[in-house]
Each structure stands twice: as structure tokens, then as C-alpha cells.
Length: 256
Image (cartoon, rainbow, N blue to C red; front, side):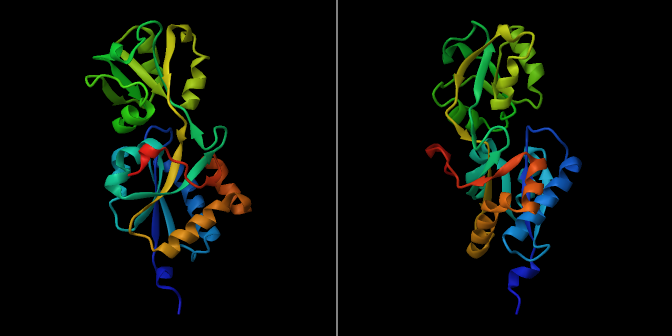
């Protein structure tokens, strides 16, 4: 008799707030990933589906579904919502051109903020701004800003950087790629790096406990670890800017 789970479909939710792209653009890519992952895990065909959502709210809603047992999320999302959603880290993404970790950098107008207290009343904007717990407790753990410093989400950081350079009461928290791009801006001399985070993961694959049987968790993990070594897996990983996966290396503050 075929295993019971052969008739079931598990959904992998890709939630990517702050990243470019629409659900329509990304859906064929995550579909290919799901097919390759299921094959590598030796799951029956069609037993793993994927769905993409570029918003925090949409991702949270999709993860409420009982069949949504696996999540691919940025690390800030995991810090902000991992405990409430019962997310258990399974693997850590190895991102093309960056690696498995990155540092986040807080930038302000040059010469206007030499201490955290100088940001009282300021607004910190970031693509990770939907996750204030990550911004305050992880990215800025060594540089605690005042309680009245607001954290906000900004999908487009270039417009924020212009406001920062112009002297508005704003700072911006940038990921590693965004930080590297600052040097190319014509007004880069008007910006100053205040603090840089410790290395943190970029993104995680997590399981939603207890929706997936332990045997399926193990087979999925083993399959994903080997995914880059298969032609189908490599073809599915490339368009998602992924090299593969490694076992999680989380800061001690990250446990949900």
C-alpha cells in the first residue's frame, strides 16, 4: 500500500517582503523549485506545491493554512514571526554572490549622528522595517536606539537615501547588497555608516510545527542539501539566485 502522505499535498510558502518581483513573475520559478525539491526528497510527484507572496501580510495569511507546512522566508521575517507561527529552522540559504550570511548597515546623514541617542525622534526605514524586532534586537543589537525612534518599512531605499542625504530626520538600514551600491550614488559623500550588524542569515527554510511528519522533514532536509548537485535542482536554484542550502547557523537571539 502506498504511504498515506502520497495522497497529500504539502505547500511551501515563499514569503519575500522587501524583495523585487511580483507573485506572477515568481510563481513559475517557485513551481520549478517545488518539483525539484520533491524529486530530491523522493516524495511522490505533485506532493509538494509552492506559492509566492511578496508581502508580509500575504505570507502570514498563507501560512495559516493547514497544508502550509514549509516556509522560505527572509531572516527578519523569521525573527519577527517565527515564534508565533511555530517555525522551526530546517536549512539556511546559500545566496549567489553573497553567501550564507550578510551584515546590515545603518546609515544617516554625514556628521549628524555619532551616538544612538542622536536618533531620538528619527525614523529608521528599511526593507526589513516590517520586522522591528529584527531591526532593534538583531541588526542594531550593539547600537540600541531610543524608544521614540520609529521603524518603518521601505520597499524602495533609494528615495529614502535621498531624504537622508538631504537632512531629513531619517536613517536607513541596508542589507549587504544595498550597502555596496551606496558608493555608486552621486550623493554618497553626504551619507555615513553608523554601525554594522554581526553576520546573520539571509533566508531560511523552516517547517511549521507540527504540520509535517518527522520522516518527511528528514527526507526534505536531506533532499534539499543535495539539490544543487542534481541537474534539475541546479536549474531550479539558479533563477532564484540560490547556490544551495546548509545547516542553520543562527545567532543565539534568534530562537523562536
